[in-house]
Length: 110
Image (cartoon, rainbow, N blue to C red; front, top):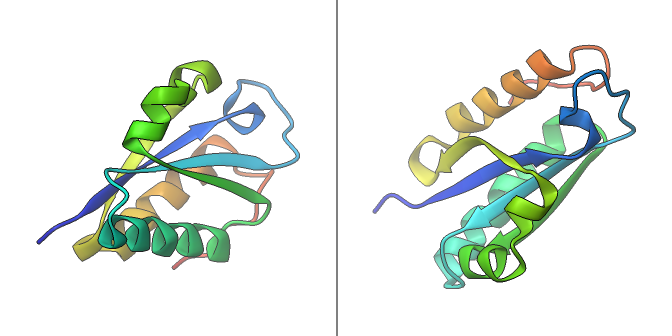
């Protein structure tokens, strides 16, 4: 079975012309069941391992909706990460972040 989470970017690292101190990411997992939570945790580990100064928040889809986090933070979806393609999906996220902030953050490949 393929599970997935969505990774969002928000904050100053994604603002045009900003000189950010960190990079804010949100991982939204579909449910609070163990498999969904484990995938979100694995995704967070992969991002933090390869991205310096990352601050990662994890919320279930119902929590994100309840707190209206995506709208309030003006977050946007960078990429879905699927359990069967985690390395490729994380690599795509890292490339997108590097494209947006090539000099501000050290990114190492997965």
